[in-house]
Amino acid sequence: MFLSENSMYRDKKVVVVMPAYNAARTLRQTYAEVREQQAVDSIILVDDGSRDETASVARSLEGVEVHVHEVNKGYGGNQKTCYRLALEAGADIIIMIHPDYQYTPKLIPAMVSIIGNGLHPCVLGSRILGGYALRGGMPLWKYVSNRFLTLAENILLGAKLSEYHTGYRAFSRDILEKLHLADNSDDFVFDNQMLAQILWHGFTIAEVSCPTKYFPEASSINLRRSIRYGLGCLGTGLRFRLARLGLLGCRLFPPVGQGGAPASKPA
Image (cartoon, rainbow, N blue to C red):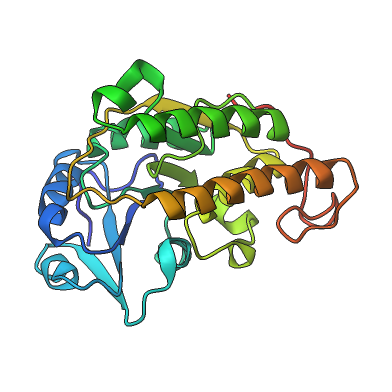
């Protein structure tokens, strides 16, 4: 079922995927704003074993395809299901947005346009560009951690991104078909591994400035898991660099000729 009045963007099917966990209180608001953009052909929501009414709320929303993990598979595991289902649905452009309303869906048309016009195959909604992170309520310790990790990863990956940790992302079908996401973590570091793989395969990454909101219902991770995530990000960057130097064999970053390619500079 098509959600936009003029289905398809330049003959490309646009699918929004929502990895959901305990998002019943914010899902309707996120969904309504996605619909308002008139830029999406379908929505797929994967409920990762929520303890609230996320799945019930999702099933009450017109045009939402709902899938439920009976057992929680983790944030990365949820995304793996999201992207598999989007490809099976024939998606050409895939937008991932969290249903916790932390990121505004109003940027969806811009992200779709960048990919649909062949400018870049990946777009990130950056909380850092425009200075929205702290103004939106990001805790200072998270902001400082974000900046440190981003600096380290830009050095290790040879990139110039403003951040690697946003949960608002758009991809072309080509990217999702190229990456071997099954090898990635099922935890939060999945996001970071995926961006490193995109750079490894030579795809370019664009960024758009994204206002963000921090409030009790918005998803977040505690300090202990944040530390584990940070160490995982640094580990990913180090493996990338060692693989690039030919000093390490790594399934995430296969040698050129086995699915890998020299990373080009991101936009």
